[in-house]
Image 1 (cartoon, rainbow, N blue to C red):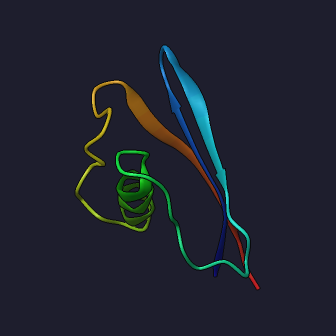
Image 2: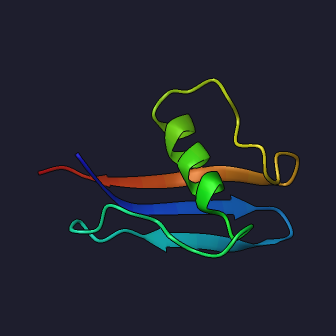
Length: 69
């Protein structure tokens, strides 16, 4: 299973789209730019009971598109 895209939508917030390259296995970036939040969203969509913390009251994870090989 390969994660293709992660899309987060929230009322009053700009949609967030993260597209993953099947050959890339690392997420890097400066502090406080959403790296941990991406990981929390992926865990939540895979069945974790822990709701992603950032924007809990404003944002919902609406769509995750999985690409199977």
